[in-house]
Length: 598
Image (cartoon, rainbow, N blue to C red):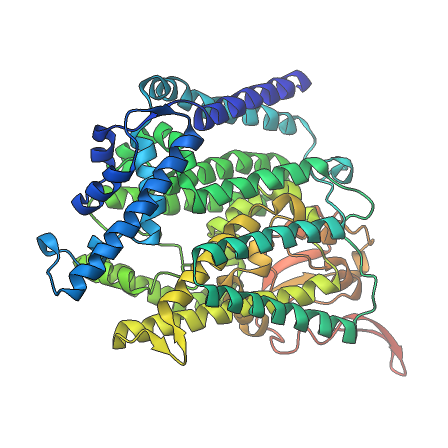
């Protein structure tokens, strides 16, 4: 069995190296034909053709750089010409609108991607077709062979050296904070260089305000010297993996032109599903789904002693594969709107944007159904389902973000900081993001119904642009997933997801869901707190015999699965719903003799 494990690691390594050679190497040659295939707008085609160098063969990085430079120069020419036409009251050609004619900032990245993809050289294209799918296959088979060794172990949680493994043992808090600050500042600097200066300044001020409130409250109530994640050790392999994931998300969101060879590999699959060539989002959805399926099998091996975990893992993989990946692509092929039916506002923050509402209405009955379904889920579905089942119905059984965290992120769940300091930070940040999502949505709807972009000095388009950049991309992707090996697997769910904040409020005050404890059986092993991905000190509740009703709890049930004494149970009950967190159970000896207090 050990030999099979090592063969799997070797196959994965070969496939991994092959994939990266294919996407970063190769030759690219920009021709008039490739430009024609990449640019359908005649105004943009003419402008870009004047600035781009045709015929020379270059590598990926040189090609992307030259294309971006050409598109930026064309942007200046086209937009200046638009102002001249506007000044002279000259109509735009072919009945174009303003943004059909002008080249926006978003077009730069889009054209860089489409032109680079259309310019892949023949020899490199042949390599992609020959070796591309094989690289994916080797990685998948290698990972499955490595996982297969886990089925040879006895069921149940074992001491497998998590805190001695350089990949999963965690890092000290100072190193973690340095990484977080560097990534955060990098995202803000990028936003400053590419977006509005005023909104960059406002974003920094908001971040400083949140940090100030956190540290002020902490110093008022908590003694100094709170513990670090894993004192005196640094998981160098985890840091390396985290930096790799961060780099991937940066390219995915803001420089997709460097991933065109990877999207070219998946063109046949994308065309079969939707009729369109693969984009970077199809690549992301494919990798996301494959990672969940493969690591979901690992979950089956690790937690096969617990039926709840088997059912839950099967559920999140099913919803990701069908509702998030396959169904939206099939809808496009049927000339229907692309939509993930399990995605809910405010996590789906652009659901109520004007362009999406207009698109859904324009698609007739089915589009209106999608619009009504989304509004119903947010207003009725979320509070109703959360009342009966807690936030676990979504966060642990349906959500793709939670599904990736539970499967691909499971090796890192013990890195979630369960200190009181982390809990205080969590409460301010996640509810701050929830409020920001509400404010942004209100402004966007105000603009949709009134046509006015300004409200109390705030511009709705700029606000939604910055929200999408900072929260939708920077927080949920770059930090939320890139920091799995650094801060645990539920960084986004715990600190940033606005839907988790919404669900948590309902769960904390109105839900029937709770984790009940039998404190008399607790042996203080600490497994429950160690494996809690949301940073809840479960053991402290168990020792007091107190029901666990925390807004952050996603009901994953791992604490119960790793408990050797059956102390913890996930239950739904409306008994003492208003007071269940205020009392602890225990043996009381008074004038009436000995009795239990519940």
